[in-house]
Image (cartoon, rainbow, N blue to C red; front, side, top):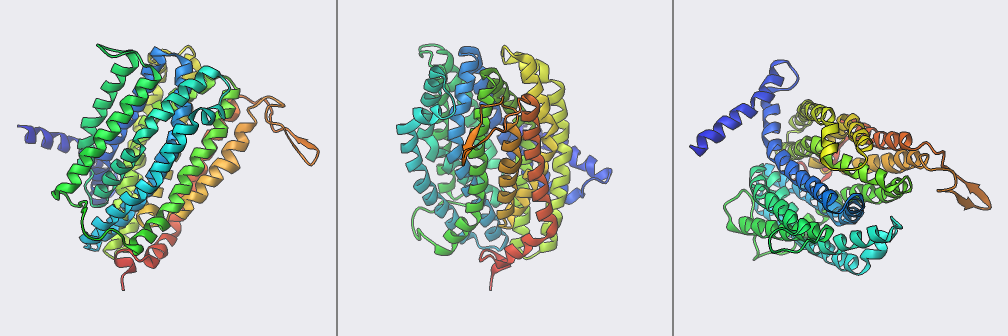
Length: 491
């Protein structure tokens, strides 16, 4: 009975790529393969985004705009190790997919172990630093004592589980690199609702539990991260999946480690440049007022739901491009990259349209005092959905080939040459003034939210242009050939 229901749901879902193929937008076979890999990642990503959105929603109701602002600030520092984990696990999917394409299962498994050791080395010092310096870190971004206090509490608690978050992402990306995106989805379908339930209980103090507010959101997330990591650990130890974690035997492989670092470092730079660039941007928003910061936080969380297909299709593109290169078929890898982009755009624009159309009732549901401001942010993000989809999907294809430097260049250009300089124009005169060699430079033109919106959109479209041009150039094929991993680099 359950199997029949699954088959019916699957058949219904695959009417979408079939319809796109009938009107000539995608190749039926390649579009369906990309869709098949992307859907579980989309569901997982949507669940994760719903969790974060639920956090903001519940904290907004329990604490108000100050709690939302504190959550946003604390989460930015959590994004530092989260960004590093995404970089490391992106390198993992690149390497595992190429090993699997070349039929080298043993080294694919060893790559997982190398990723695990690296995760441990990176995450533990970050946990210690944020525990000790949480309050001064939050104070760099905001001068409201209560907001600083709440943000520091959230950061200290949530960072206790950062290693477990690292490991969960490694396991999920390793499985995806082997073509299995469903198992991570099943794990998340169990653990993420548990996370939402825990947060609700701890934020509002339901039943015998005290009302912890922002701290409750942090503890719920930390516990759920730990549970998810333990589940992934047990699954990969079992040996019943396409990849596995082998605790015994060889612990280190210099060649795999070098490739993890080669692929992962630019990705880490990409993530960290985005994260660190967000700090001065949040300072600018804070200077425009706590309502602006809170509206941005809510609008961004809502629009991340529309952006989830891009995460799924980026993973699909990495897997399909990487496996094709591992098998030695560069032309097939190229076709998978472009076909995945086509179906990604078709999927994402539909979802974005729905969320933009419902912007007002969504903003009202959050209970914010500044509905119109929140609606404007949601609709502005909607204009950038196409750019985000292109940027993310093309980056996935490049990642599958191990070509990760150009997405870094695009991110640096978008963030530091466009987003931040344009956003600074939003400030009133004097707020961002600096003195250089006796000359006062004051970029503030008091353009307000117009400059903020222009900054966000310029960043998105610059990154999309850089990643697309890089994939179109075909230079990623040479990068893959020069790699020591998979058939493209084999002797």
